[in-house]
Length: 310
Image 1 (cartoon, one colour):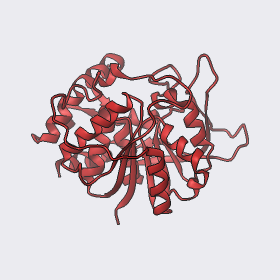
Image 2: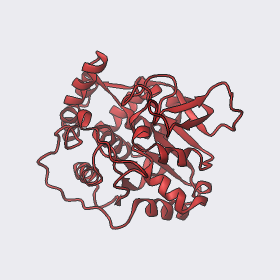
Image 3: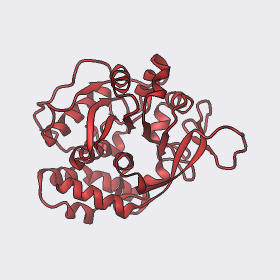
Image 4: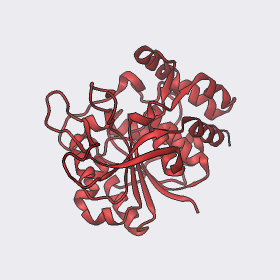
């Protein structure tokens, strides 16, 4: 039986790879894709998602619903330095867009479809958590009907990637993250930088994809991304942040998790957006998050490459 999934994305380079993995895996009943402000504006994230669905020739099959155009309380903060001004590293810049978004509002779409398939839908969130926070505020009982929430975000043992302490998605809308972390989801899984930084797409992987339209897209979109990662980390590769979150939804044994209490900082001059994990139960609070602490990167890439070549 296929996994029922809603993908919530702020489509930059790695979100796009996550969408491609979900569609090409053949193991997903993709109920819909929702978009959110994050790496790029809501409009650009939606446009980029349309382009990826066109590339995959599935635009007519998958509803695409725009959501929040800004964080709950904060001003927008884009990541053009990594993803380029267009969000896709310049790939598909000249593409004619055929797919058009569906009418509606992402939080409402999430509520409607989760309630319609109670206990069966996994939400895979690869951008800031604004849409889900809005959905929870409108429909608090949503938490009892979701199968699982898997979100790419946070870091608990290492440094951040936008500030010394904060991962990007948490930094952009920490108030939304706090709503989600405290909402009471029975299964809430955090795919953070602790594991995504260990899953590095390199030039050998790209060559292994062959010479198809998707392989050419992957090579073009990640070209500058690889260079930016090399400048910062000394390795010519790029971390597969968002595709790993999709991978965890499909193949849970890729990661090792521990259930721990996690909160997020929202009122710090130095540490806004930091995910704070109580490893030693010093606060004595009930664990709320399945925190990914280890990953089998080789197994991930075996499945990723096989799916994209299918």
